[in-house]
Image (cartoon, each protein chain N blue to C red):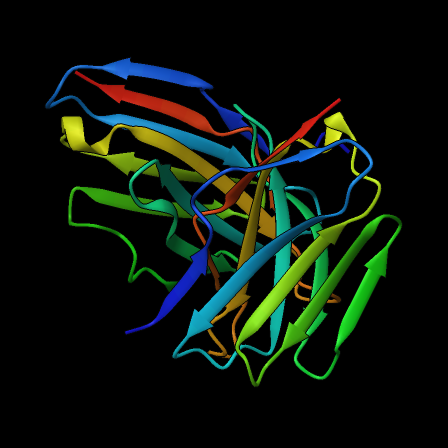
Length: 113
Length: 114
């Protein structure tokens, strides 16, 4: 069956460290993968998109990698800050030719001062 | 731009009542998505419109749920009759069909069915 797995346990790190979140998928062949941030009581906010032919994408303190052989994406936040505390969702397209996204359940990140 | 607008933000209703959720997409976005989010199941796509036409409604849980998009500026998600298991946060998201396909989410409607 098709699955997208993110660590359901919260990730606790200290301010200034690098946070690394994992997204694994099975039985999908996505053309692209996206990462979103969600704060309590709010809708998800788009952060980054990486295509199947890209190995790495960066935006300021954020870095995403995409390994289609391992069927895995890693999301890194360098020099993390308490304001980075949120739930991070990965989403991939079902490769249906449409814009339909399938979301993982998210990983909660807590950055302590 | 005001972003995606959803109303109401909170809805409390009794089992059996009809519930209508509303969404105004970002101007110029021609794809619209309705999602439901719960702790148990996460964020699930219910239905997806492109240019006001329903493209994929395979996520609509049952016939009690219906969605319409009469024009490019408005969409509704209706539940009739509502049941306690429909309690969730319902999000509307929109996107363009050009560029990177990122989706822009509204603030959501928290629905509680008692």
